[in-house]
Picture 1 (cartoon, rainbow, N blue to C red):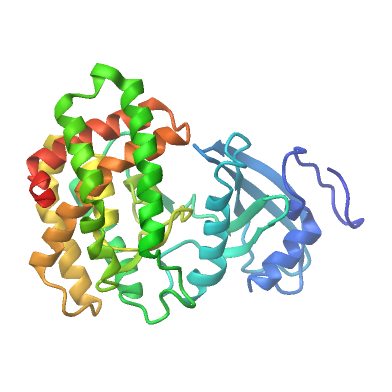
Picture 2: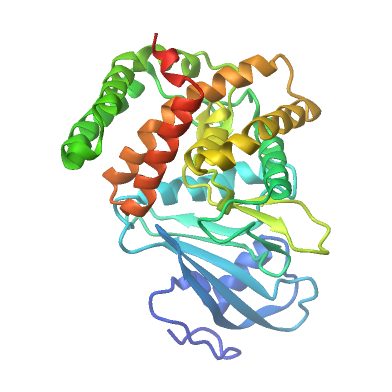
Length: 364
């Protein structure tokens, strides 16, 4: 792609969307309030990172004219071709988050968004985001867990994020959508079908004890869903809150932890995120060492940020219930062709947590 005004010398790989052309980027940065009189002159791909279900590309920018304060690089996020159709709604979700919800949040919780668009006809989408590469980093390379201090900082950020949406009056109207009882019943019916095929595939690799638990869970799902349908003490949950979706300030940088990857956000019980982060992602020794201190820190931060009427005991009960719900996660992941290296390990870890926390008791 080599086009646009005579002031540019612009070459990009053909798979990149038109939004990365200098004129389009100039317009986006002006709308974002970070570019005044100058214009983007040249764009260069600095790094391409093919994430599991999307592409994350770091673009370097050069300007002509006055560009003080304008970013020297941005992050372009776009769909991964292998998942572009099957997970199109994820792109729609993430664009909606950054363009509708993020502008109404306190600063320094998520990266700044300069531009986002989802095309209903083609299902193509993109996001142009603040590049935090120089100031922030993930706690550790996947699949290593964070240190204790890093985990505390991550949970502190999560509590701040949850608190700002806690029982928001716009839920179901201007912010997110409530699932009706019919909606959740339909989802459970779909899950039950996935489970049957999953169990057939695994054969004797899925024990009879676990099969019994899954069957009891499916039978009791309506009862378990009463907590969600209460519409009380809920927030905007991230939906994929593993610790590698948090950016921590680098050494010597005075800044806050930022959260990213919002393609699975929805109104939900807040402990959905905690259970996914801790019980689904960490092996027993690490989880047992940090689980209680992290829940304590999370609760303290909720209260510090204005949440009222939610007790520490309610948090524990919600957490155990959320851990139980996450036995569904490996099966949903398998159903969309996420690799076994992800869902198999999640399956083993979540069942260890279910056993440790006595979550089977919640089935009566």
